[in-house]
Length: 247
Image 1 (cartoon, one colour):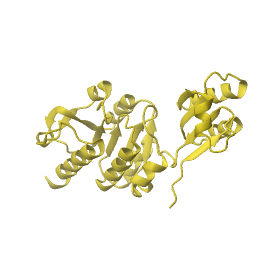
Image 2 (tube, one colour):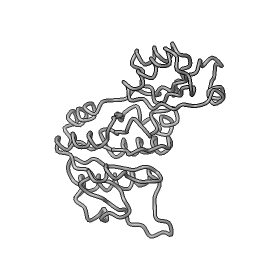
Image 3 (cartoon, helix red, strand yellow):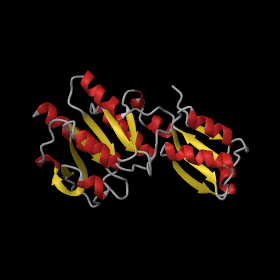
Image 4 (tube, one colour):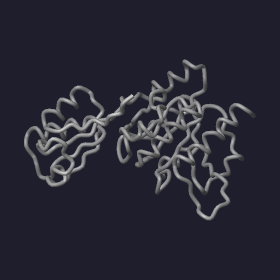
C-alpha cells in the first residue's frame, strides 16, 4: 500500500478541499494577505478547528511543490479520521470492555506511528488525539505504524478533557503516565481503561492529568529519568493487558 500525505496549493483548491470534507491537518497562509478567498479559507479553518500558521511568502515559496500556491498551502491527512463512537462500537462488536489510548499533544510522527502500532498489538480499540498542537495522520505516521493504521481507528477531537468526561459516563477509567505517580504494579488497571500518554517533552498536561483517575509511574533503574513516549506507552499498555488477561 502506498502512503501519501496530500499537499493542496491554491485558494480554490483549498476551499474545495474543506467543503468536500477532506481532513486538513495544517494550513499555512501568507502573512498579511486579507482578500476574499483567504477570508473564506480562514472561516472554513475555524469551522473545522484546523491549525493555521501565518508565514512569509518566502516560506510558502520554499514549501510549494507547484510554485503556484497563491498565498496558501494545506496539508491533508494520509488517512481518514474515525469518530470516538466508532471506537466504542468496535469494542461492542468484539464484546470487550473499551481499551483506548489518549495522546496529549504528541508532536513526533514517528512516536505517533509507533504508539498506534503498540495500541493495535495490545488489543486497544482505538487512539484519540487532539486537533491542535499535535501531529496528524501523515505519511510518516502511516509508515511507522507498520500497517496498524489500517486496523486501529484514530479519532481527532477538539478537547481531550471533554472527551474524557464523556467516556467516563461510559464507565471508562483513565490512567496517565508520570514519573511522580504510583508504581504501575500497585494499581488496579482492570476493566475499561483509557491510557493517557503525554507530550515528548512536557508530559501530560495539567488539566488532562487532573481528569485521570490514576497516575502511574514505570519503575526504572538507569541514570536518566524518562522514557520515550512510545516506549512508555508500550510498557504501560502491556501491564494493562497482563492485569486484564492473566490476573
